[in-house]
Amino acid sequence: MPLSAPPPRSAQGEATQAVDTLAGRNNLLQLIQLRWLAVGGQLLTILAVHFVLGIDLPLGAMLGTLSVLALFNAACWLRSRSASHIGDRELLAGLLVDVGVLSTQLYYAGGITNPFIFLYLLQVAVASVLLRPHHTWTIVGVTGLCFAALTQWYQPLPEPEIQNGAVSAHYAGGLLLCFLLNAALLTIFLVRIGRNLRARDARLADLRQRAAEEEHIVRMGLLATGAAHELGTPLATLSVILGDWSRMAPFAGEPELREEMEEMQVQLQRCKTIVSGILLSAGEARGEAPVVTTLHAFLDELVAHWRRTRNSPFGLNYDRSSTPDFPMISDFALRQMIDNIVDNALDASPHSAPSLLAACEADELVLRVLDEGAGFAPAMLERFGKPYQSSKGRPGGGLGLFLAVNVVRALGGSIAARNRNVGGAEVEIRLPLAALAPPHEDDGDDDR
Image (cartoon, rainbow, N blue to C red):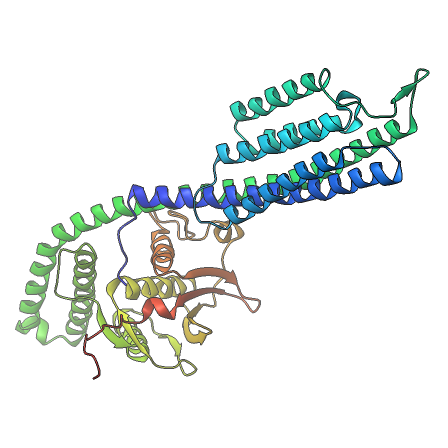
């Protein structure tokens, strides 16, 4: 459960590939839906023209071609259920099959004289949204060649479409229906496809942001580890000096000085604990490894340590009465994260006690930290958890919340901030119970 190092580049690449796979699968599903509409529309049109309008069509050949398209679409649906990557070439191949089937149907139904020949524009429009430019131009070239071929090679319809210089009613109706189909399908499906692509871009942007934040954490970790090495010796020296002073007669005889020295020793011990925790998180110390404890013991110890080391006359309001007790793993990163949130609440409202409330909801541990301060500014809420976003006005401020967000994220949880209606602010931390539970080790014994 300790806060791990940022994932390697290969893991970030796998995450990006997962986003692309999801977007490709969604786009393939949109094409599948569009193709089912094409199958149903072609079937109704063929039957209506043949049996209602009385125009003889080669039903065997046209229905056979339509059956091939339906089988191909069923295969595409099965393909969409797999976890492998669906790229531009696969989408291009599907669109080429659609163009081929449409060209075959037009060949049997009048070629250039068929008003539905303008359905080629739908294929080009879909390709322009889904595919890269060179693949889109492939669709443009293929549809152009098919269009040109159908001006020369096709089976003419029994009824001429132009009589005495006027367009027949059938042809005019077909043109109107073709226009309505193009307009409706373009509006519906291009909006859906565009939404899928925007969602993909948003997920990729989020991944890039996370990668940048993780690189920032690496740099901070290197600096913190170096500083911890350097601070170890002077802190030890100060501890020895304070111990010697506390035994000297001039200091021992002054109660106020002795009280201040005790406070100095407490704060010095806190500094040494922080330095040890930094080295432990970096894997350079083994004095305090993550240990198995219980939720109640962890929270009680954390609160007792906070009250002992913070100079707050109002203390800390603490309630875990509605939280069940269960085994969990405790480590420095988790404790430090909660301490940072409570410290921020104390800084926001130094004249009142902050509150730490623990509860379990569903499969999550929910920790709520409340204060009675001025609340978060709108700009802070918009960029909550980003580095160097702080209302304290200190250089380098805001790193505590930034690190807290990343610790929670590493555990698979979430953290949110809001302003309370009664005044003050609330920070809510949600951690999956599964991430806190100790691993179950198999002892390997068989019951016989």
